[in-house]
Length: 337
Image (cartoon, rainbow, N blue to C red; front, side, top):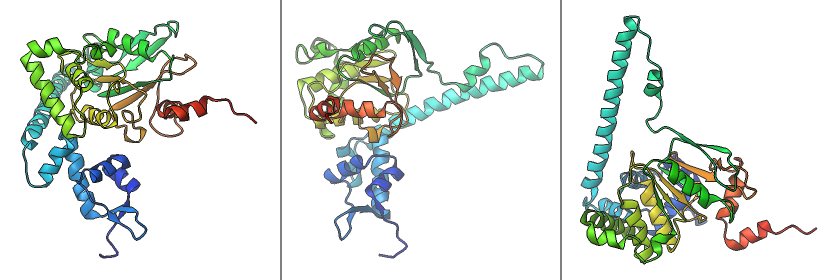
């Protein structure tokens, strides 16, 4: 082993790959990646391990489960073609969008050369995302303050302590986004939530079965609660889905698999708003660029967007909400001198 060969610790390797150290441990646990151990037993990642990890990260971004990625790395490409076809479709959609924008630019420049000024809003349409932000008056307990949601991310977490109003905020978001679906706790009432639709809608049933298979391959445990969640996620909804307590009825492995699925749906996926208090759902070290965190403070101050790094305003409050019940109790307990 030459001295010029670079070996990274877990934190640096994860940072370079754009994932969390927790993700690297998961790849190791599933037998996809074997780090090199130092004499003291620390995990390190050299060029070979980093190249393999990069392949895993790429396949996850394409929407493959860990089990599918493991098969591809072992020489079995089944499942890869469908993922590549989906990615190709997304890229073709982007090309069409860019082509349309280029045509609008050409037309605008032609008119400028003729001395014609742009129409109102025409320039804005060329440089801002198609998904506009949404603002609305906050419901009780906030007393009508204005909240600007901004353009919806692929995945937004809604978090706050008990009694903070996060459920009312989630319901309001579903109300103001046209065509959004609110997936409430009643999805668990009959054990399947959408059992009637699953029985009568063959296309929905096929999508749910495909998603369940992906989740189980990724470590989830099949259950009525998981089926109910998938039925809601795979139902046709025009704009967004808002989920009341995503983790309800799901153990940790299933929660982690569901979040991985939501992250790896690919570009252009409809936004999901997930209310949670689980650190298996919201891993602060793994929040990506197309994810956002909305905190509902305990004192009923207006909800606020929180950046996922220590020192950011609201970060400690979010971390406390995600802590185990005994830790939350210690934090909330007054300190005695």
